[in-house]
Amino acid sequence: MPRIKTVLSDEAQGVVKQGYDMYLTHFGTIPKPMEMLSVSPELFELQLKRNRYFASHSNLSFGLLTHIRYMASLELSYRFCIDFNKMLLEKQGLNDEDFCRLENDPCQTILEEHEDAMLAFVVKALKNPSAVTDADILKLRGLGWTDKDMVDAMLHGVSMTNHAVMMQVFDMDPNCLL
Image (cartoon, rainbow, N blue to C red; front, side):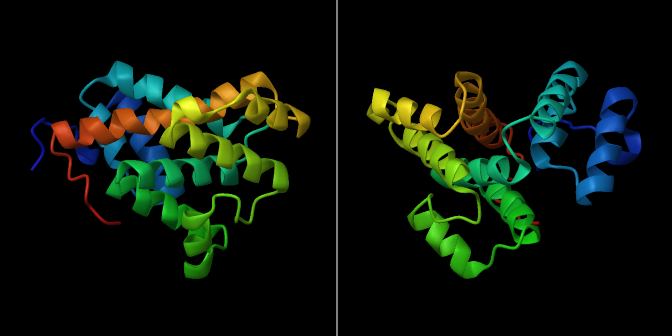
């Protein structure tokens, strides 16, 4: 049982209700991190804005962003987001063999080559930030990525840490399965 009193779907009002309704319509579930943030409507709204920003990103595709979240969740052993993003990737066509390849080599995806490179960059940086080199940045630029794209992709990956830690602190059932 959570250590905080979250807002239940049938009790939600305002921005929390709007967010819950959107998640239920699009995904059939309310993501646990959003339920956790429901105790602070202002933070909930900020996260919704962040989600909308990435959902309408001009260069980072939904597929790439989902891969980033999945791989970041694996690094953090963040069960809810592993399962949630795995479900989204399965809807995009990934099967068990694809997941095995992806987990062993982030360049083995159904993504386009330049997206594979961005995913590999984010995964490398998450595992060991000091291992990133100027050559890594130049490679991404050579594939058409902008500095803004790199910063946005990295933020998307590292932001998984906030939720993974908070889910544990507030006992939000981080090991729940969908």
